Length: 79
Image 1 (spheres, helix red, strand yellow):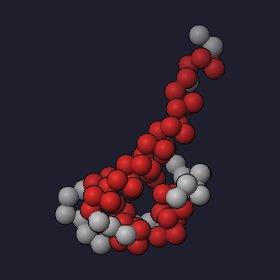
Image 2 (cartoon, rainbow, N blue to C red; image 1 turned 45 degrees about the vertical axis):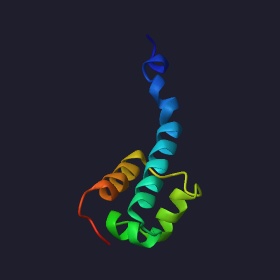
Image 3 (cartoon, helix red, strand yellow; image 1 turned 90 degrees about the vertical axis):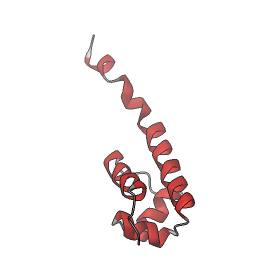
């Protein structure tokens, strides 16, 4: 196996990011959160979160998306 063949999952990154963004949107909807409220809970800039969920920010890392998802799905976290 050559180096290129050892990382086939890298092609999945855009798909994983899209799935994470959908999960963030869904969590916000289920909790009835505005972007500003969700940003407070996730400890991110509201404009950055707005850009992420509207698809205008493409440079966001999987780690950041995971942190946002985790914060929004944590029980008891309120803005």
